Image (cartoon, rainbow, N blue to C red):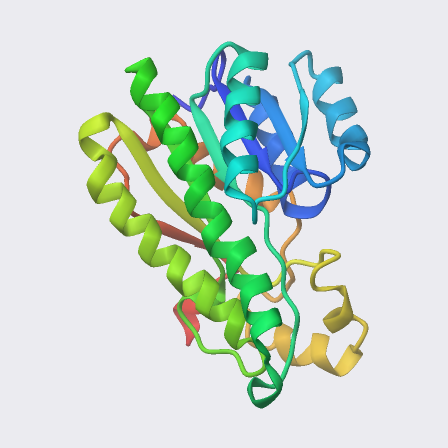
Length: 252
């Protein structure tokens, strides 16, 4: 039920961190995985790991803030892999800023990447899945900020809350097409996006005190949850958001 053998996937933001881990996890479960990022050269490491697993890993240049890019990337992945069964919307950015200092440029940069980009990638993938007539699975990367307000992260939290709403709405609309849409909400994971926080030992200790499992997430912790939500093991699940947070949300 958890096998992805024969499945064709596209993962955005797959050059490093969470995106790279999920892309490798899908390949470990049997999928060929098209990997996308703004810089094709940055995808070489992820591509090499997937290739060693015996799967295709075409690298695609993608700026998710450009609608034309979203459509082209989905088409290129489909051509390279012979079809498209899975999309993982992982590309995202964050920039901490006091709300009174947020300007239009910062707001647009974060929302265009995290929410607008995810929608148009999903739309492009769903059009292909509809044409194929075989359904598919879309996985969006939400956040704890989809559920909880975090000071100095208002644009990011707004984008991720919007992404959760989008996940639910698309799940309801695309269910008749056989396209399931779900989300993951990672908790505290150390990546290049969050590295600035982890530089503070007091911050680390404060955050660990909020996590019932008493540790930060490891990237491999996201693999099983991702495979589950895009495999037949979750065939009757759509519109859900699964926290992978060591129990943080459950304890609030």
